[in-house]
Amino acid sequence: MRALIVLLTTLIVPLAMTASARADRATLATLAPAADARRAVAIGPAGQVYEPDGKGAWVRKQAGGIAGEIVAAANAGGSVIAGAKNAPPFKLKGGAWTALNLGLRPKAVLGTGSRVLAAVGKTVFALDAARPPAKLADAPGAVLALGASPKGAVIATDRGLARLEGTVFKPMKKVPKKVQALIGDRWALVDRGAFDLKAMKLVAWPAGLHVGEAIAVGDGLIAVGTHGKTIELLTISAGKLARDKLPLTDPKPVVGVAADAAGRVVIAMRDGTLAVREGTAWTTTTVREELTPAKPGPPPAASN
Image (cartoon, rainbow, N blue to C red; front, top):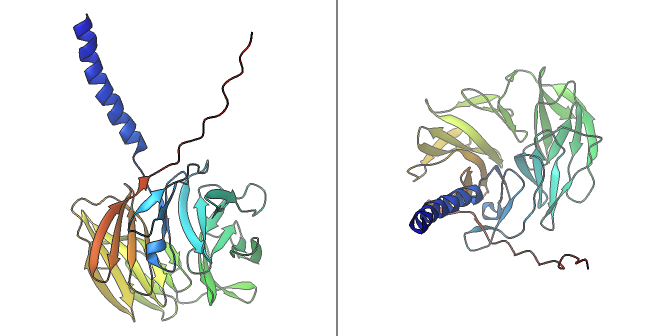
């Protein structure tokens, strides 16, 4: 009997450890961009925050998160803003998340671009770092997507695209009615490519490439395309498309991309892998946790 117990223990303990390791493995939901892509913040689905340590690694040092599911992130003047499913946006401050007040029980859509907007139904709010959220304008219909820069703002509704003129959103002409996403106020992702809302021109994607994550950099666009187990970085500049294949053998789904004017790029994958480009060289790293152990509390009260 003793031998049987020992045998069962040797089998169960490794299995338990494997299950625990699998449960603790980092998972990413999005990437909050930064002026220097190397300072982008990786965020898990429950608000786990992995910040760059300045040495090429992204580390989570503080516990905590939110009850909702993170689906998007943005950077408002250096402050990380996260969008959650069926919830208001959240602002990261001092390692903790705070819900932004956009009314009672808001279900907000977080915008993209260098100016951060959010929409609740038909109402569009500006999320500036130094001030509370402020109403910007009302849309002609429920906002499905929005993007902005200091130069302007564009929204998508079931009626099509509209651009902010003063305090009124006016319908845009000669643009796609339906878009997959708005990237800032300059670009719209559509089925076959990226539509330049200023030049009124479609830049087509390479055949067979599925494009998901994208970010506007200046007047250009940087996107990530996948084809099977191949990931490519797509750069649109001056109307021309350039391709750069990532040196990854078994990449996981891409959940975010950050890029800057110096050409640095960070791509986040769901399994916690980050691919970083500086110059023409790619490196990879995996987010990790270095949580500070919780301080032990007082012992439970004893009764006589």
